[in-house]
Length: 85
Length: 160
Image (cartoon, rainbow over all chains, first blue to last red; front, side):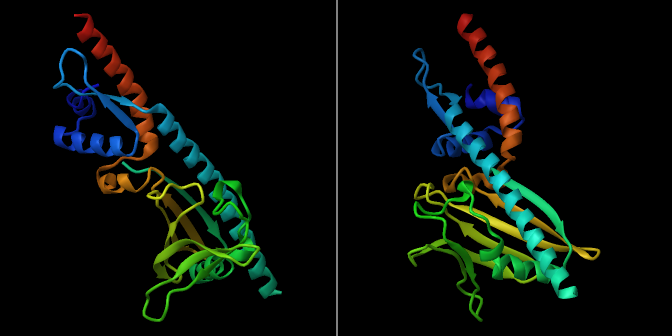
């Protein structure tokens, strides 16, 4: 998709869309290319592998933190009980 | 755009007691987890070094079995009973990949609600656009839809 098409589809002002695409490109989330018939047009494509990588990170971090926080809860509440005794 | 994990849970204790347990006792409650592997030689023991009296410094470190100390991150907010913010780096992160853990402690009746936010999985180059951003999950759901629509659109243009 072109930056203009994306901006329209998302209801975002074109300059803001361009900034976002630039940042996404830097982070490896999108790639861009020019169609053969017109070098002025830039077509963006999502980098599915990079997105998957981030999604895997997020899932692992969420699981990991929920285990750690559960441990913290047990630790604090056990401490409180032993103080009360 | 920024991506983050947000979790919250309630603990039966005051915010100050929970904050103290979180920081002072992290070596006791933290359990080794491959999702949070800090160095190739981990696991070691985690500990917080509180900031000095002037509020400067403060960090989270892992002491490896051989005695080596790895700095996981630096404390940027240390407000006992309220909030803790620390940067967070793991062994597998690239040189410019920084994340941050922000923990809030709020009283709810006799309990404390702990809200933990781990942000910045999409790395530092993204951070300057974070303020315009949407959560990654939202992004992922629109991207699938919009991209399909976009491809249809492109196909029509090319076909014409």
